[in-house]
Image 1: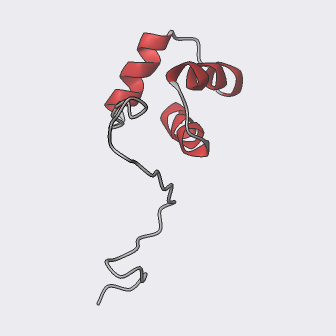
Image 2: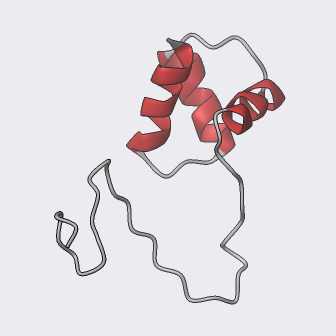
Amino acid sequence: MFRKDLQRLIWQHNFTLDRLLTDSRQQLEFKGERTTLFKIIKSMGYKHKEFQNSSENLTFVYLDETWIYQNGSSIRR
């Protein structure tokens, strides 16, 4: 249940690990440390990469679980 609730917190907003740790402690009564939370997140398949110092021009788009195909339709043709 903890992982499912943690995933919900992750999906709620763009987060830093410190922010997620604070939210996890307040909302999920997480008692572990920052490193433990990082290991849990990593075991759930999430990856960490810093984009703030990247030379690439990046635009982030947040999607829910809806699938969109090549031409923007929800139906594969």
